[in-house]
Each structure stands twice: as C-alpha cells, then as structure tokens.
Image 1 (cartoon, one colour):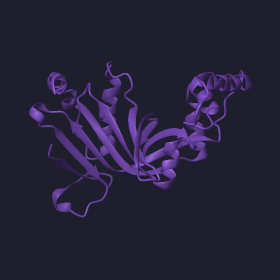
Image 2 (tube, one colour):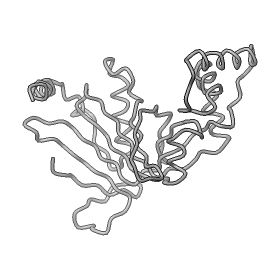
Image 3 (cartoon, helix red, strand yellow):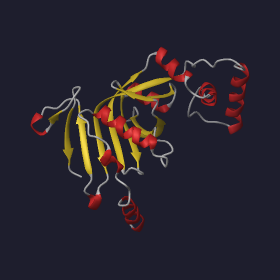
Length: 226
C-alpha cells in the first residue's frame, strides 16, 4: 500500500498541462490535441505506444503493446504480422480495445471499436516508411511468435534478407500489413486531486439522448463519475 500512496503523492505534483488544451466536440480532434502534447513532452519517450487488447477464439482476452502508425477520422492504425496471435484473434473476433497511458501528463485514453484490414496499397505505403532495420525483421520473421531454437536463428534470417536486398528497396512481405481500429467509444481520463478525476466519454450511437450531449461528426459525449 505504501507504494500506491507514494505514487498518488507523485501524481499530485504533476503539472496539469492538459488544462491548457482546448476542449473539443469530437474525440478525434481531442485525441490529436492530447497526442500532440504527449509528443512535445520530452520525458515521454514513446508517446505512440499503446496497449492493443483482442479476444482469441477461446474467449480469452490478450493484450500487448504496439505502435500507433497514424490516426485520422477513419480510426487508429497499426501494423503486424498476419500470422501473429493478434491477427488470428482479429479473424475470429474483429473487435479491439486500445489504451494510451501517459503518466507524465496524468492521463489515459481508452478506445473501443471494430477492426478492419488495410488495403495492400496502404500497407505497402506504411511499410515503405519504416527504417530498414524494422523492415528486415518484419520480412525475416515470417511466423511471428513461433518457437525459436536460439536468437542466432532469427539473426541469421535477418542477415539473409539483408544480403538478398543489398542496396535494394525491401518490398512489403505478403505476411505483413496494417489494420485500423474504427472507434465507436473513446474515453478520456485526467487524474485529479483527492481521487476526483475527470472522465469524458464519446460514443457514436446512443438510445439515451437525455443524458448525452450531441457533439460533432456523429459523436455524443457525457461526463462520468470517477
């Protein structure tokens, strides 16, 4: 418990920089404002890191950290190996949840929605923007999460790909591509003093318009109890 109280005491001294961020009537605009602040905060080394939670065909939830590739009105994009466990989860259950957590700002963002596979053209464009080192590993790791005899095995595979594409552009492999989480619910959480935290949720559809405020671009929003 002492560790928890120490953490809470630390949060009380976080400068609430989010107070300077204007509100928005749609969650994508608000996300981009928070995200821009996270990217400009020097102590946040990986602002693009997000938890991706999926459900496998046995009904068990699984989660891992992935990188946000881009965000727009159509959703939040990430990439992976099509043979990976998360990609297999999305075949049987094409829904996912994302979480961004930036403790330096005392905030988090939860996102839920359908997941769609990106087109081959868009996946190729995404892959071409990666550093060569990432491209090599993505190409060499055909069966992501499969057992390895040793680390030397994958290192050798990477070296083989590097030699094959020496001084050449590495094309996007067939086993790799992108996805987009199309959100229908996004919740913004701000840490407050004395446990009085600020929570704002946006949804795409609601049957209870009496408790919701109509926003923009088809969104509705309301405040939630801490």
